[in-house]
Length: 355
Image (cartoon, rainbow, N blue to C red):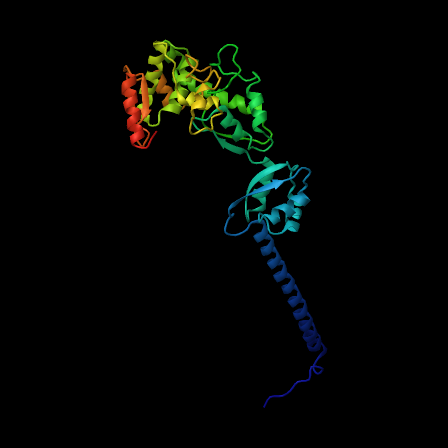
């Protein structure tokens, strides 16, 4: 038979032990609760500082002038780069960070605080532009003008100032047309127009020298600059690679006979480069680039030639041709030596709906 025991009964040391055990349980429960909360907080903080799953997609974050890390934290949170602006401020205060630079940053959503602070410390992301073969200086200026802090007009002014020259620039010329390397470039927002030009022209000079432009031009008895002009014409006139060498030969043949080049591409350049269909009055434009009216080569290249066009200009395909016209939908051209043959080819092009 069980006997009920009164807590107040028994020796003093038994009653004291019972009271201490109850107090200990309360303390232990409280401590356990604090530990659990602290552990949960530590896990939450770590998830914020080092989000699980790795960083997400890249976003462009613009930081205005005068931004402090306090305002930056709100901007980052607004763009999903960090979740807690308050915790990010505390992280920066504990770990330290340099001065925030104004500009545009390519950051990752849900990235670790260490990565974010590192990216901010490196400064704004570089802007990237690509200059394709066949681009004119005006086309290059338009692309540079889309960079932060730049304008097409400012770039063109710098390009014509004479402060940047190519090793292949003729004496007295300030034009950089055709002397810019077709390539992809990355520039910091603080990079000025002259620095951009120097890099583009230096890249062209490096390629041209490695290519042996001066030596190869001398071999066919033209100057390097004349070879560049011919290459730019080939770039614009030859629609398929197989025709490049023959287009170059037509140019040299007509020059040798003292015939005007009569090239539509030069007239289009004279009109600003954005005309797709020429009309009769266009061929009468008063311009040194109008090769229907002015004999010889135009005064500068009419585009940045590709290496393939430059190879064709320096290695023209031997032949007597004086004329060519597009006669196929893929851009293939028919070449001829007499005006009668050219007129027949033009009629064929019209018949095919190409003229």
